[in-house]
Image (cartoon, rainbow, N blue to C red; front, side, top):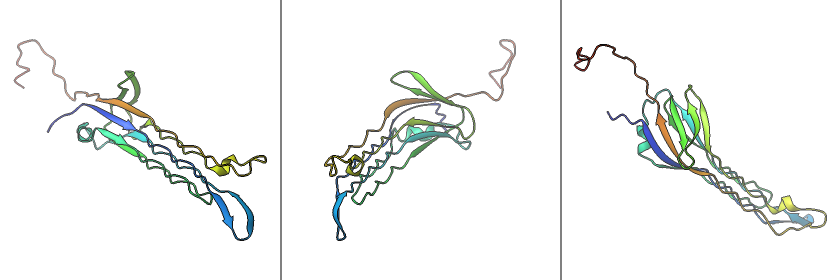
Length: 175
């Protein structure tokens, strides 16, 4: 069994979906109006502790964790679907550091504690949000925001179960 107590991974929150430009045309609504929906929110990347894990070996197989993007808005004021969050499971006692700034983000030392690492981008507004009295038919919408990206370093703090104390040359190493 290999004991891994150090891992470096790349995480990225999902991008937000774009807003939609659409106009409503129905039989009994003569002037219709703008009906572009908003884009969906991008997924977040969350690190959560798990009592069943004891090493960071699972994180050495996959080095990139990228959350799903939000869907684009649609006509008839339909909001885009939000992106799914990614949950990375780590053992208790993991220290999370940002590799670029060398700053400690969080110390996950309790059971079921979690930390938001990379936030997903917000979805853009559709043209229905920009309707005013002066501009009743806006022809523009917002793009979705980009998600955060970071390169993080995970370090597992290891505590010994047993410690041996004694004089030098007392035979501790043979045990």
